Image 1: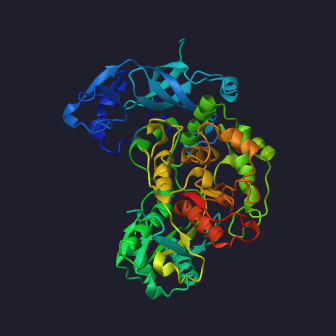
Image 2 (image 1 turned 60 degrees about the vertical axis):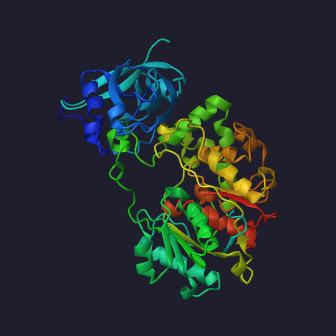
Image 3 (image 1 turned 135 degrees about the horizontal axis):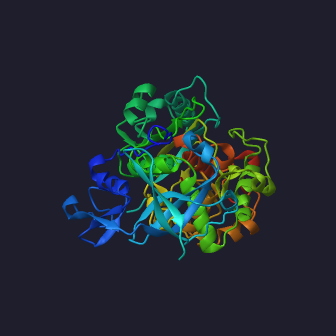
Length: 148
Length: 366
């Protein structure tokens, strides 16, 4: 699997150190989010200040959260902007509202071709994470439907 | 203190929007647009003492160097597609406060590579996460998710929004600056075009192009002697939102919900007074949500509005009278600026075959 993966791997560019716990979490097949001790809420993506209340890094801690959420919205990608995804199209690109109260984007997998092209995925559909070890270094988070 | 009536646009320029601009640089295109706008204002280059450009990639120092300008007021307005409208506001503020007399706003982008290498440019969450799930900066995935949510929340249909593309195409048919001049499309054509990102179809997306635009802004006093009918700026608001669509708290809302009320309050007018609109339109859903957030159409009612209203330049409420970006092409960072130029052109009464009948009051969203 390691040398075969041809699609983009995560390339943290704002501050790789800050987002490291998230990616260490996915490697363990766990979902970790930053939690702000000032306003008492989770947020994503990883930052050095809280995007809700501007609390400093010292007030931000990492917590494992349930890897569950709901489909807030989605699009079915027929013409991927990245050539590496061309063979997979059409595929689902969704905005997931996590039960922990933050949002993340990811692919929803496990739908048949007919379901994908028939727009069978419904908004508010409960989903859970599927962790995919794409290389020895990186594990990506995908999502699949579960019963509500 | 307010911007109301303090400044006016007295000269405009727009180069043809083209799929490719071989042999031309962004600075070169900006130079052409600048010359035409200054000439159109019946000014000399020496009269220009203020300069505003997009500023993020082509900053004022480079432009003043290339064009041989020595402004006493200069600034960038790095607001992506909204740079032109933002720069227009900054220009009005500058002349109102005596920082300059005649401000040239010029934005342009060459387009010589067939397709830019997706994913290579951006940084941040775009490369850390978005690229791994199959999207890239500028791709329609974010707007498509907004579209899907809007359909769910308000019952908006794809056929309703197909009218946006079809009506704007009608408006551009005789526009010599349009990449789609003389190429009509119907609602059925839009519905029959392939999906790019469901629910967005191909004919609901802009085509990346090159081009340039420019205006000259002067004080209200100087504008009285203008050769052209002055286009007074009566109010303005400038808002922004997270660059990444999915980082926005409410994905069916745009910053126009915050900027439009300020512009209206400053102007003394209400949405009911507006006669026609020139609105940023990278995708059908985006122009639709912005029209709602401006107050011109009630939130959630844009679908029925487009299904029942003639928004062509001949219609009851003209929108994007030159075809907008959807039907003229999107000249990159100058894309939003085209809306400012077309609004001014209509108010000056110079839109020729597509001239709107009522042309006193326009709402522009860059």
